[in-house]
Length: 125
Image (cartoon, rainbow, N blue to C red; front, side):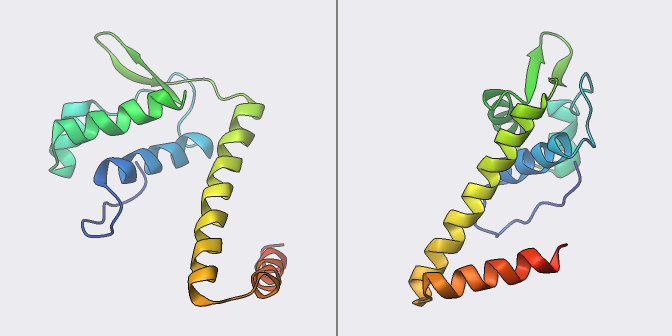
C-alpha cells in the first residue's frame, strides 16, 4: 500500500485503504496474481481493527479488483484495458463531481471552472 492513513481526514479508514490498493492495482504497481497483505498483518501494521481491513478488502472485491481465495487471502485479478479505463473513468467522475459541488458552493461559474480545467489540463502536457 503506497499511502499513509490520515486519521481525521473525514474519509473512513477502510476507504483510504481501499483507495490506496485501488491506485496500486490500477497503476500496475500490483500485478495480476499478487496477494494483498494478510488482513491480520495489515491491521496490526496500521494499528487498526481487523474488521476495518476486511471492509476495505471486501470493497475491492465488490469492484472486481481482487478475489478472495480460501486459505490464501486476497489476490489481484487480471485487469483488462476496458476495465482499467472504466475504473479510471469512475475516479474522474467522482473527482469532477466533487469539483462541481465545491464550485457551486463557492458561486464559481461553469465557465470559470472550465477555464481552470483547461489550464490544469494544458499544464500536464
